[in-house]
Length: 120
Image (cartoon, rainbow, N blue to C red; front, side, top):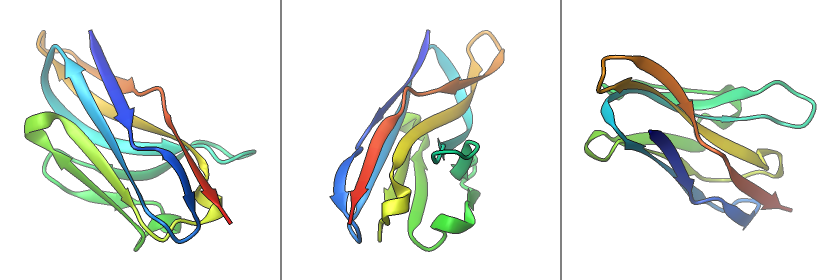
């Protein structure tokens, strides 16, 4: 049993900051890539930011310079620091991770999502 447990969402005014966390728990051998996704209304799900186990990062153009993804491999946890938030950042943010299970099987897991609401 593997779960991704997200926290840190909430309501913030435009220009404010939030920090999301996502911890992978359960019978885990190792965690490969981790990332955050969102799905704006009427649009396809988009990658917000991702990070490899080695620390290489990738960002959506819309969040570059404002969001920072990081991870703590010892805790199997990924973070998303969101600064200078805009109203258009309002969405449910889902954590995703590629996990190597103890049985040697590689699988993708998704969190249930955490709501981020940015008011004007």
